[in-house]
Image 1 (cartoon, one colour):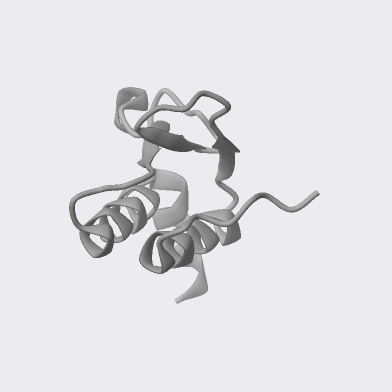
Image 2 (cartoon, rainbow, N blue to C red; image 1 turned 60 degrees about the horizontal axis):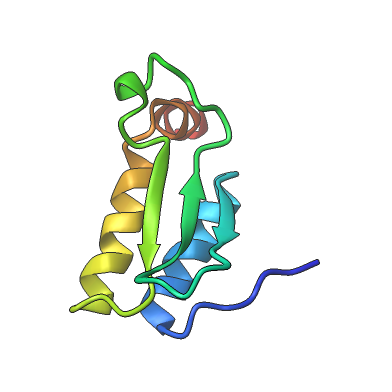
Length: 89
């Protein structure tokens, strides 16, 4: 079943990018500031000690463009994404 789209287009584009790279998006059930969570499919201890294996997705960030860029940066800094990009070059 497809997930509910994020209301901010910049963030939705970044979430689609993360999903293309294999990241899992979980929408929060609680009515809180976090719209959901983004989880790395590898959850590898070697990948920055797990620092970015889990990240919150805000529902109403101050700047949706910057939050979208942050999501992409987290995905791109994953060692598995870097290895995949190196193989495709």
